[in-house]
Length: 173
Ligand code: AR6
Image (tube, rainbow, N blue to C red; front, side):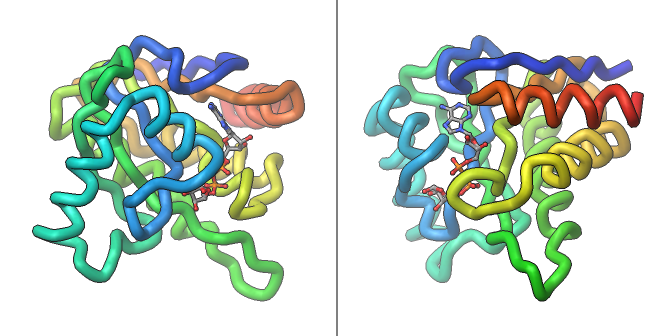
């Protein structure tokens, strides 16, 4: 049985097998979680991202997909980079957001990860409303988690995000 845990804090400080990064399709870094992961993880992560771009993702990683690199100096074995959708009022992109969680878990399981830490994908720079982002995250992880994953930890940066996940978890069990 998978355990979903909520932590308020910085994802780069977590000790888990895999840390998920809310990246962009370039895989070459950015602000938010992405910036923090590259800063703290060191240049090895960016070097692998560049190599992946050259070998497989010349046009960029597509929204909703996920790919793994080393975790560099982070206290983890892997960083899994996924590209969340930008929030849109006109278009329902929630299937793409769900895909980020599902694909990241698939990649983590393939790598033999037991513990996986997620940020609240798309809810920062990409503008997704936190309550809806939290519901999609919890629902998707509940439905998708696979062996050998035993713990999925959501690492929420602020109290507002933490509360949104707490509410979603209480509602969905
Ligand atoms: N640990 C945990 N959560 C964090 C941290 C941290 N260190 N830093 C921010 N958050 P964002 P996105 C929260 O913007 O919306 C980048 O430039 C933040 O409060 O990191 O998917 C990429 O390169 C928010 O709730 O990711 C892309 O261009 C959540 O993490 C773009 O931003 C996600 O915020 C992706 O935007």
